[in-house]
Image: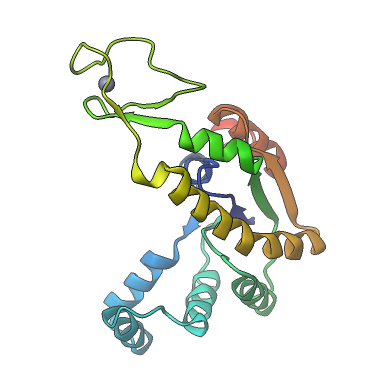
Length: 219
Ligand SMILES: [Zn+2]
């Protein structure tokens, strides 16, 4: 089974991807660490990649394509997950080309969907305690007991990334890049949209449903 995981920042995608790889043993495609592995291997491709990285340049799409292809060709696990990739239509068609060449098939594209305004509210109301590091939400999960470190009220602050300006910009960029990918996979009949406006357990259960899996790694 090969899946692609898509979801905006703040949708809980990282958490859900982690659960899948831990409990259901999905092999996880992570472009960054695959590039680093190739560099350490000392191969010709690795040297080429090191050149870009050392100059602080983006690694070009044809190299990402070769890394992807290699990852799929070496595929040993039954379950493979792409997370944070593809990021745009160019990468999506590159993935399709590799899959066709290797006679492999994408099973599902899971899209964790939360209404844009709900997502923004969820993030801009997030606060962290300086002392105990607990994460709260001013609306849905305000502090209800004293700080576990200081014994007084938690000392809340907002992370820079959570400000409406910073997060809003990130969200808009993500949505702009992702809409064409969603359409691409919808046309291919692969898109499964999952309502991610729920707690972690419920979203996990919805994902297992789509994948036809039982809890705790049982097939
Ligand atoms: Zn605290």
